[in-house]
Length: 361
Image (tube, rainbow, N blue to C red; front, side, top):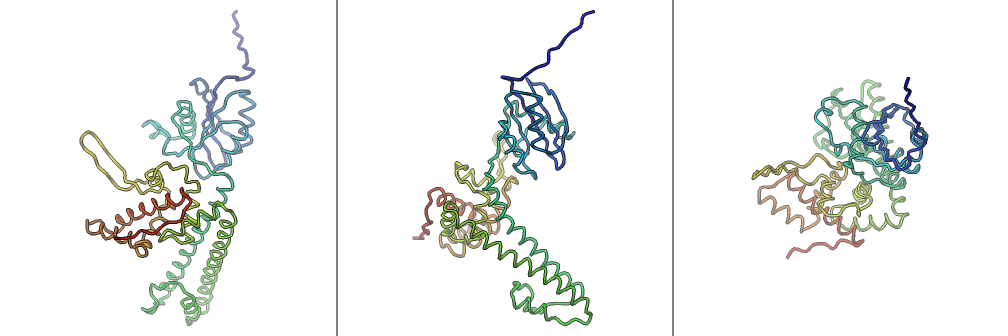
């Protein structure tokens, strides 16, 4: 009887090992491809150190390449893999080539296998990844946006409650900003039912606490950004551009961080979501709506700054007026102003110089 004896591979020297990782909150689905063959697909606990140990133990001395999609998990896994000598990349999920069959039948196994396959075929490109320090600064600044969203919800809760119990604000107070006088007015509203008064006081107290958190956080952000020479100078230059105040300057910095990763204005505008989609076939060419692929936070900051800038910069106001004459109004016009503003941001940041105000002749 002939018996075939297979020799166990002692090491994987000079062997490229491609690893696709589908990341979930509690588990990883891992696919390993060697020489174009899906050698192994398995699930494990979502533990970066355990994954590294598994790879190095089962595939010793190999040349390792791994990939996972950007998302909620951040970059802890990426940094752990890199530190262990594994060439990891993080990709935008929209950039992963997907067949029609894979779109129709989506499972963790398929997703992990697809990542490993496309990595082996060199079809994937890593997104820009901040350092831990840069990421921490960005998260700190983004926290302000989260608190502002909380404050808006709390204000809406108060207005909804007043409407529910039949309290109509006087015309001179409707639509007003939530000033101290307005808060005092709400605190002094008379109630026949004590529990209604108690609930409104509770809502107002929560609102006041959130407002206090925002004020304290802004001071913390100012301190963090001004203590570092690099960030201090960038914020200083951004503040010279009409329409950009401290909060917007900090937000723009947090979303870009490293301006050198953008080669051109169009590259940066695409990142910010200020470029239209384009469909071309033969002689037909159609420029569509703004692409959905965007950094939403950065786009919001730029549009907010653009509305302010047309009131403070004669050159941009003149540009806005010319757009209106062409029939381009409202949001479409302000998007174009935002792109001009972005051009100024790119210039002052790259050249480390203050903005010189435009002059209309």
